Structures are given as structure tokens and as C-alpha cells.
Image 1 (tube, rainbow, N blue to C red):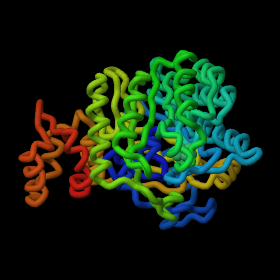
Image 2: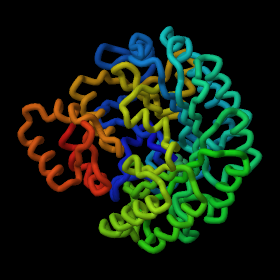
Image 3: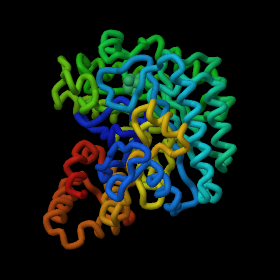
Image 4: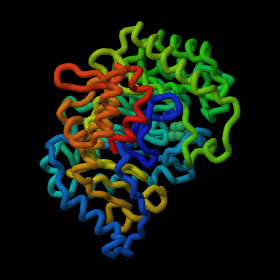
Length: 436
Ligand code: SF4
């Protein structure tokens, strides 16, 4: 699954700071304010959802192309490590959510500036979007098409859990317009998968991958996790090689972190590998992926040439995207916003006719610059050297730090750009904190 702007926060791929589900990567370091507000209780300091909706209406995007993230919150079971915004799939909950989501799409599409923009990517993350029946997914995409112009070559990604897909269902997703799948495998060790709370086994993961290919998916990503309890370096190598044997077009790999909000974050978990083992696992993956011709194009992501995730690149380029669904975060114009997290209240707010925006923030120039640097430096393309220079300015301490990184060759310059090396990716948090 893929870093997605939900409330889970910016996911880092280095050992000790990653997450299994890469979904809506919230370039959220600057977005501290996640107040939950009640409709009708607005004031200057505590705006209502109506006022927050108006802020989005009055804040047109700077560009003509946007990404669109849709959060599907439901999971059959909560995984121990997960801190994402999920909800149990109770009777009738999916139908209520879909009704609300269609209203949200209508409201977003009715904003005057929506007619002037085109969607270049759509990403359905979760939660477990593959709990959606294919006909419901088709209806959702149709609703988006009826309200927005979608680029003819738009990338439309759906996150899938292996146990919730069949070849027929995946073919239905393809017929609905999904042209990229992201399969949440996480591990191929049948003694580890149940400990994580996953509902599939190694055979099921392989079967789901093959079903996706048989259904015609030619842009297929696999998610793995390292730093897992009970995972030693050789076990990790076996999993990596096995997945690479499948020949995925894209691979995301996150080091486990015990995030606040996860079950393990609250209770702890035994058997975690040491940091050195996690670092060893990072390098084993980097070497194996390179040997198979995958480019390490972002801290946590590898791709066949031409198969980078276009949607996630919108986040890493600090570009603009709309968001819908409980807890989803969007970034339009200079405004970052977050939807109501709780699915029942998300549905109630939309039933009342308001966009379910819980909080918003207008980023300052300084915040924008920091985000562009931090997000850009996550990628192998790095950032323009001039952009980094504008942050360094007269900050002698920061310049000294950056010079030290350059001297160690973990930060390198070429063609008027500066980028982190693979060794630099491992250390990136230390630099990113300073760039804020
Ligand atoms: S399947 Fe597990 S990891 Fe993925 S969103 Fe649901 S609870 Fe979280």
C-alpha cells in the first residue's frame, strides 16, 4: 500500500521510521493542526465545517492538474503495527460510506474551480479498498468522471490485500478503469504474517499476484515490510528474492515503526530486530533490487524504468491533490486540509450538506520551502541546488551541516541538483529535522 495523506503522517522508509502501508503519504511535517470540529460550532478561532469548506472553495489550485486521493477506511481486521485511519466493516457501513463519498465527490465537483482542473492520477487507499465490490468501485469512478475531467492517460491505482481479491474481481476493477494495483504482501513468512494480524499466507500472496497478472494488470506493485519481529536477515533476503522472482513493476518496502495509534505502539511487541539488522535488511533489499534492474527512486520505493508511481510523485514534488474519504488530507493552492477522521461523523457531515473538512492550514513560504526540500530529497532526483541554497541563506549552522553531508558524499551535486545517496536515505531524518 502506499504513503497517503491520511493522518498517519509522513512515512519514512529508513529502518526504524517506516510503515507497512505506504498509502497516502502526508507530506505533513508542517501540518500540526488536526483539530476535530463540530458542524455549526464555528468561531474565528474554531471554524465550522461550513467555514472550512468555504476556505477550499475560495482557494483555487495553482496548477491545472491535480491528483485525487480517495480513502476507503474499512479493514476486516486491524493489524498490530497499523496507525492508519481504519474502521471495522460492520453491517451497512460500506453502503453508508459510499453514499457519503458520492456526496463528497459531488460537492468537490461543484466548486467553480473544479471545472478548470484535470485529474492526472486517482489513488484509492485505505484501509482495504479491495473490500469494495467491483461494481461499487466502478460507480465511484463513474461519479468522479461525471464531476471532473480525467486525463486520458490518468494513473488509477487501487490498494489490494491478497485475501480480498480474486481474478474475477480484479478483472472487474480493470474494466472500471483501474490500471495500477498495489498489493499489500508485507511478508512471505507464514509464522510472521499471523503475528502482524494479516489474513493471508505466502501462498495467498503469490496467488493474488498471479491473479492480478491474469486479470491483465501490467502495472503491479508489491508492498513489503522489514524490521519485523521474528524476521532475521536471511528470512528477509528470501522474501525479497521470492517477490523479485515474481517480476513486479514496482516495489515498496518500509521498515517497521511502532507508531502511536497502533496496537503495538500501545502495548509493545517482542522479538524486534536490532537497528543494525534493520539497516542490513535495507541494504540487502537495495542490492537485490538493483541486481534485478529496479531503480531506487525514492527512499522506500523501487521501480522498473517507466513504472514509478505517478501519484506518489505528486506528493514528493509537493504538488497539488484533492482528497476524499474519512481522515484524508489534501493540498490545494497553499492550503492543506484534513477530513473528519471518524467514519460515522464523516457520513453525518455529508448528509448535512457540508464538506467534511475538520482542519486546514495555509502554509507559509518557509513551510512550503521546507516541504519541497524534504519531500524532494526523499527521491533519487533530489531538488534544484538553488532551492537548497535559498533555505541555507545565512544559516551558518545549517550550511555547516549540509557541507559535512557533502563531504561524506551522502549528499551529492550534479547538473544543478542535489540529492541524497542510498546511504544518505538511511540518515535522512537527521537532515530533514534541520531543514524544517
Ligand atoms: S490491512 Fe492492516 S495495515 Fe492495512 S490499513 Fe488495514 S489494519 Fe492497517
